[in-house]
Image (cartoon, rainbow, N blue to C red; front, side):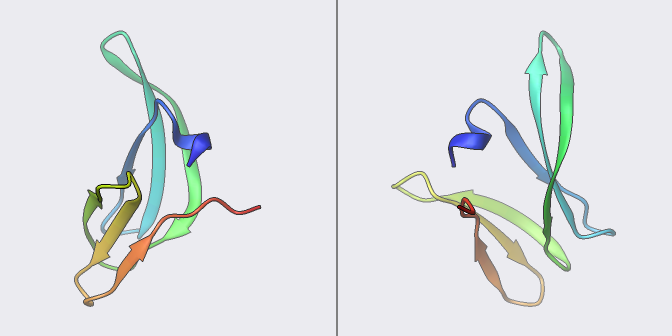
Length: 68
């Protein structure tokens, strides 16, 4: 995910929205919505190939992918 290089990904459990930000010194900066929603978001993970996943309390696992 080249667009997320150097950024952190986080989610809002109540609103289901996924966001990213970059760190500027000691502060979060440049908050951007990813345009993705995961209902009942519970966690994130990264596999050995550096692919990013989001999990849901519904049991679903989502892999984040770049849209071309």
